[in-house]
Amino acid sequence: MEKIQMKTPLVEMDGDEMTRIIWKMIKDIILIPHIDLKTEYYDLGLEHRNETDDQVTIDSAEATKKYGVAVKCATITPNAARMPEYNLKQMWKSPNGTIRAILDGTVFRTPILVKGITPYIPSWTKPITIARHAYGDVYKNVEMQVAKDSKAELVVTDKDGNVTKETIYDFGDSSGIIQGLHNKDKSIESFARACFNFALDTKQDLWFATKDTISKKYDHRFKDIFAEIYENEYKEKFEEAGIEYFYTLIDDAVARVIRSNGGYIWACKNYDGDVMSDMVATAYGSLAMMTSVLVSPDGIYEYEAAHGTVQRHYYKHLKGEKTSTNSVATLFAWTGALRKRGELDNLPDLIKFADDLEKATIMTIESGIMTGDLASLSSIENKRTVDTETFLIEVNNTLEKIMK
Image 1 (cartoon, helix red, strand yellow):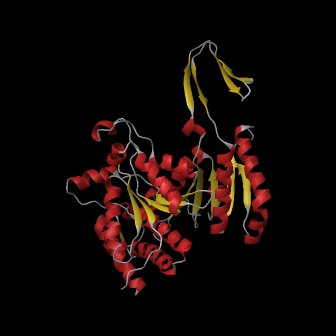
Image 2 (cartoon, helix red, strand yellow):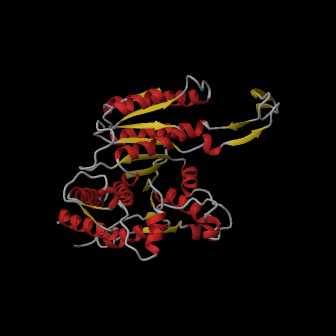
Image 3 (cartoon, helix red, strand yellow):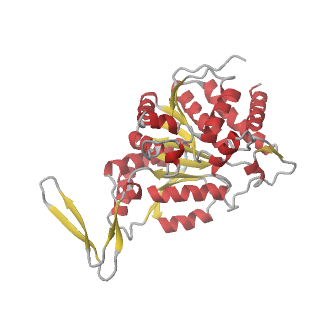
């Protein structure tokens, strides 16, 4: 078969450990045989980030702004134990955090549903997409330990030197801790627009939840900005699309989510989204069966797997042992990026390829061929647990049957 042609490159961000091995397998076994693959390549492996003083991460984000679509492999965010292992100059920041900040993006994570893997909440028959605000809050906090008999104050100095103070707490006979959080109207506005646009693109209802009854200024600011942008820019569009924007308190949202059937987008502040995305992924079955896309308010997309670098399997791989690592989320990162590239460049063959590859992946699992993590969850009879490479070969075999 003639290879599918591309017009504009994707930005390709390579990564670390076992997911880096899977990344190459996907390209060699499935993508390159079928597509004249055009990418602008950036090596975000920890060793290369260290060599470039993390400039490669910044360069990859700027390239994404230029080309509009990127696909990213999972990467290591180093801790103290990684410093001697990789001989690091410093404990480099999360590449995802750097890219999110440059693109001003919102992260959308959606579970991949397959027959035979029943969610722990059986009523969840449709996927729940978590939209996570990716700026500020506890992730950009300032913290201090406070000695007893100290007074902690919140102090703001405006551009004219005027000072406003609020007492946080007057510590008496006990020491303690304080924490300062911030966010920006501009970032919250970008978050809101990204969520409203994603809801329109996918024709799903959008929920947003905070705790504005307790946090009457901080959380209430989020609520007000969402409401104002919805009323002024999106209300008519939502009504025309037949979808709903719904606000409620975060604790009420949790109760509603548990009782629901799914099929909507749940927008969360940064910390809430961090926690709830892992909860939703686990409840649907596996973090390795979760798509993740970073969307900027001006329509730039970066697709990745929601999970980490699978360190334990990588060490087995280095010893020459076979692994049975789930590659589905990484496959769907590629399909998401290829589909979006096809949509932007008006390439129906590329869009169809992405659709077919997703269908082939799900069909392979539902036929009983799967990696070890899914085999332990699946209720399908006569399952066959296969290694990492064999699974991808089987997916490609199914894909070729579909394409013919």
